[in-house]
Image (tube, rainbow, N blue to C red):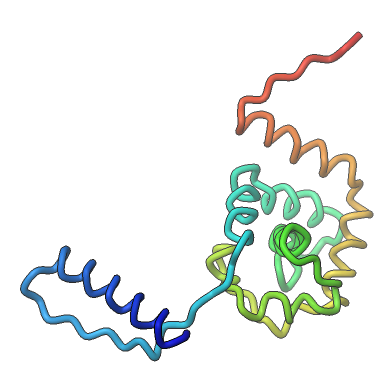
Length: 156
């Protein structure tokens, strides 16, 4: 963090602490605070959670592989969508893209940055193709229609 940004953040935290905890002495070590540049990532992660993207991918792709992956398929799908919606790095640069993101806050569980490689994402895409993309799309779109109360009619 720059000196000015750090000082503004310090003033903000101090005002919150004073307001909430009047009379208590609080010491905050700012050297332990690491900023994250999530930009659109948090929004995309929230939308993915609303339509239960992780659950759909985990259920449909696990059937075809028969064993649980090291990183859940739903998390892989979510990471790919976040990347596509923000900076669109190629698969071999995914680790670089997520280096300054708080992956645990985006997914709800930790993922080692070293495990984000093009082979793992390629394996996810292969599993997705084997699981039938139309079925995945149908499940996700149905979840979105239900979640956001979108009515649709079938034309005859």
